[in-house]
Image 1: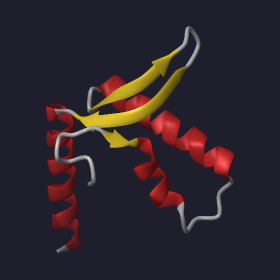
Image 2 (image 1 turned 60 degrees about the horizontal axis):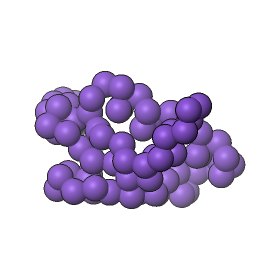
Image 3 (image 1 turned 90 degrees about the vertical axis):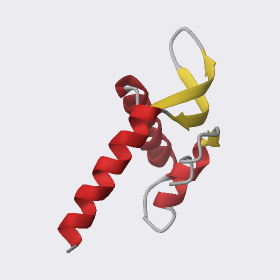
Length: 83
């Protein structure tokens, strides 16, 4: 995970996941934005950007301590399933 180091990371790294998939660009943006907003609501990441009264424009994200714990738990569970 590219934002593991604790520094702010551009949100475009999430779009790399969808590069080989045949999904429209507007749909990719919606999916990524919703996912980031859900992770912010859970407290797993912090979002940096501009907020208007109706909408967030998230430019950068940063992983929190809770996010690191969730990631480690997910990775360990994933490793067990592979074995």
